[in-house]
Structures are given as C-alpha cells and as structure tokens.
Length: 572
Image 1 (cartoon, rainbow, N blue to C red):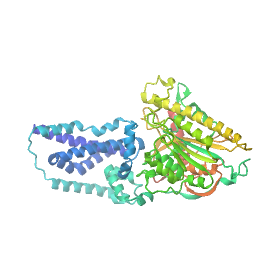
Image 2: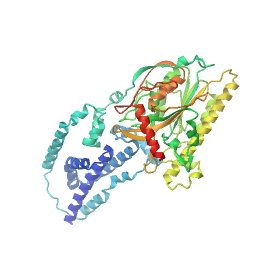
Image 3: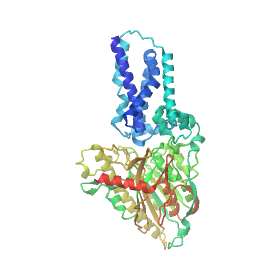
Image 4: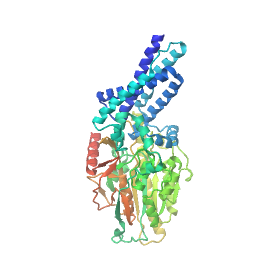
C-alpha cells in the first residue's frame, strides 16, 4: 500500500508538471521538443518544493490548489482558443459577469485541448483515496534544502537568459511589448503577476493608449461638387457591425452557390475592402466598437470599454454631435453587458437602445436581428436628420444556435457537421436580414424626404462590417486570420453603400478598424482635426500609413497579399 501511494504520488507530480508545461506551450505557440524539455525542467524546479509540501503536509491545501489550478488552465486555454493571447488578472476580475453570461448561454467555444485541465484528475483522486484509507509513514523531507536547491537552479536559468539579453530585468524594460517573451521564459502565471503589479491603477492602464497623430479631415471641401448638398443637408450615416462575421465567410460556397449571396454580390455594388484588420483583445467583442469609435488600438491587458472614468476623448461621435448630428446606438443585448450603457454615453451618443429599452426579448442569446432591424426602421421614420446610427447585431453569436430558434435553411440539412450546419444556417439568416434591412432603409429614406417636400433628397450612407472571427475549429472552418511576428491578426469584410451606387474594390491594401472613424467624418463632410493612425477609405484616397498591433507596424499591402493567398488556398 505504501509503495503504491508513493508511486502514484510521483506519477501525479510528473503528469501535473507535464500538464502545466503543455499549457504554457499552447499559450506560447511553441511546438519544439527542446522547448518542451526546457519548460518541463523549469516548471519542475519552480514548483516541486511547493507541491511536495502541500501533498505531504497540507492535503486540504492541495485540494484547494488543485481546483484553482484546473480553473486556471481551463480558463486560460478557453481564452487563448478565442483571443489567441494571454489572460490577465484585472481583466479576469472585470469580466466575471461577461464570462458567466457566456457560460449561461452556452457560448464558450469548445475544443479538445480544454480537457488538458483534467488530465491528472484520476491520479489525484487515487492519491487522496489511498491517503485516506491507510495510515502511511510520511517520509521526512528537508523542504528548506529543496527550496534553496530550486532557487539556485532557477538563478542558473536566469543567468542563461541574461547572457542572451532575455533576463527578466531586460524584458521588463520593454513591457508590455515583451509580454509573450516573458510567457515563453517564465510562464503565464509570472506574466499575470507582473502585469498586476506594473499596471496597478487606472492611470497606468490608460497611459497605454496611443491615439496616433493629429490629422486634418477635409470632408467639408466635398460640399461644393455635390449637387444639392450643403452644411445644412449633411448625409445620414448608418454603421452596421455584424456579429462573428469574418472576411472569409462572405466568400463561402455550398454546392456551387454562395452561402451569403447578398453580401457576396455586394462587392460589385459598393465600395468594398475585402480585408479589414479588426481588434479583438482584452475587451472581447466590445473592442470592435471601442476601437472604431475612438480610432485607437484597444488594450491587451484590460477591457478598454470598462475603464472607470474614461471619457473617450477621441470619439468621432462627439464631433458628429457638435456638427448637428443626432446620434444613437442599437444593440440586441442588454446594455449592462460590458457596461455599454455607461460607455456609449461617454462616447457621445445621445441615445442607447439595448434589448430592454427596445422592448425585445432574448431568443437564445440576444434579440433576433430582424426584430432589432424592425425597431430601427420605426425610429428612422421619426428621426430628425441628419442622424448617425451605430447598429450592433447579436444573432450570429458563437455557438451559432440562436438563429435555429427562428430560421432554418433546409438547403444545408445534408451537411454532416452539426457545427458547420449551424454556422451556415446562421450566415444565411444574416445575409437575408441584412439585405431586407438595407433595401428598406433606402426605400424609407426616399419616401421620408419626398413626404417632406424636399427638392434634393438627403443622402444616406450605409457601412457594413464584421466584428471578429467566429471562433470555430480549423478543421471545420478556415478563419480569416494569420500569424505574423508572433501576433494573431484577424480580418473582416467592409462595405460602403453610397447613394449614387459607387463601385470600387480595393485591390492591394488592407484596411483597419482605425480607418472607420476618419471615413465617417469624411462622409459627414466635416472639416476637423482628428488624432488617428487611420485613413479615410472614401475615394479618391492614398492610403499610406501602416497598421499598429501590439507594438508592431504592419504593411497594408503585405497583409492584403497574405490574406488573398490564404483565400485562394481555402478555395482549393
């Protein structure tokens, strides 16, 4: 019995340390055996004394520690699977409510690698059963000596890092840009503790924002050439942010036909940017509207939209409001989610209509898009012009079960993969409801202006774009994403539907969320100074700036070409 006890103990410790090693390998994105060996030895040295102490002398403490470790690994992998980055302590605390909502509505993406968290569960159960059933003589171990030996070995590793200029002190000088290198060298827990200590107040967190350079937007110069358009007749602008719609989705085909025929055809009826780089970081989906409205890269270590007291000083919505625009934002979820009800007010929106304020109900998770669109159409009928509406849809949310409650495309029934069938069905619904909504907006705008007896119709521009990739397993669907410079980049489609039907498809350069703010100010025919790294995407343009992402500047042509090549591979 005693022999079995110690054999299981040793096997458990080895498997447990292997689990932590593999977890760090997943986060670091490394697959080399030499790196695995390094992480295994480092983790063994770093944690052996601690775990031996708990197991032999504080079994209750070991149980508590094990539960926390399982949660740490499971949550860390789940977060990485969707966001392709490391989790942070303050971020985790601020997103507890949002995380519970994801669990409640079964919207957490699933993957087999999440089972890693429980790989050593049978061993620890066997260990505690044996420990309970028998009175074993605990071997006396000189824990202080083990601790000192571990410290000395860790210092030897650190000297090796210092020789290569990669010691902790070296990497801290360039933190948080060096964050992934710290994860590689020291693990996720060390990185989380460093981030917690270095960014200890909201001022420190806020100082990470880089708004860019002041740029002159000269939209007012375009007033003269446009017949019937004056400062008192600025155009209406509607921006539609579609949930979980990436750049590859609009090109999907099934049995020879487009899955999204309307959006697929829209590239020949609009100003179309096939690849727009999105930001999907510590704030999840909310990073989309935050980065777009403020034209700034959101934070990697904190949900930007939930920064207490942040007044969104770079919000283009405030500029629109100052130039006579009536502003409103609509979302098919509850306003308290991500504190949007507070954030949108500080961004300058006069009205925020969430699910409750619209009088809608959850069907699955969130209100159906067609009900959201119907409410907006009624608002447009009564809305004083000019107006700017920002619309955030909800139906196409992972795991794509929402739409099946109210829409079914029987043409996808033969698809064997349940997940892919749900996704295609959801995309088809998004396509049909978007087409119907846009068609009705155009008709409504014309009827409204004719009813008011205006000689020249007020123009309405519609912007349509996705927010991020769908979070599906690569075996099921190849997302519009790629790894460059150890950074995970995602891309969504972007369309501008103009009143005169301007058609243009960008052939060389990728756009980014930072470009949407300058584009909207340009569309609004406003002359202003605006701080941004973005560019107006309206024609004619000369996009020359690079796109920032986690301390690196990406060339637009390089991004476009690589995504285009990936798209060709998907078709093959």
